[in-house]
Length: 84
Image 1 (tube, helix red, strand yellow):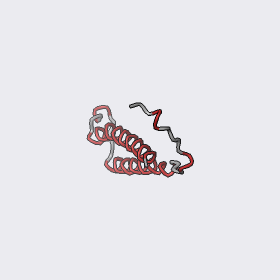
Image 2 (cartoon, helix red, strand yellow; image 1 turned 90 degrees about the vertical axis):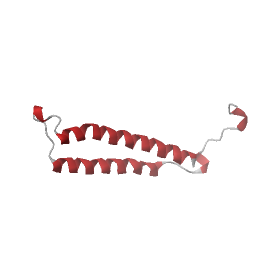
Image 3 (cartoon, one colour; image 1 turned 120 degrees about the horizontal axis):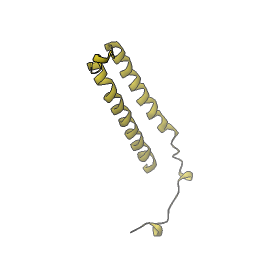
Image 4 (tube, one colour; image 1 turned 90 degrees about the horizontal axis):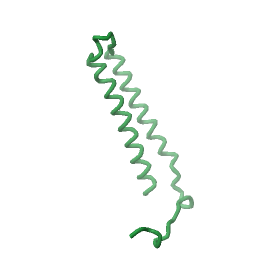
């Protein structure tokens, strides 16, 4: 359970970073922040990019299926070696 929860947490952080990066770039473009420079984003393109973002997050989460949860692959650390 610990290995799976650690892997899940890493994926959550990765997906949060992806979504934040996407929104930092795409939302200002969709709002016309660079219209003065001739850079605009049509609403249809924004919708497609949002869908692509969702697919990327979903595919990234699918990597969790590769986490090896077999008991024989776990490393057991004796209790005497843990810092107190």
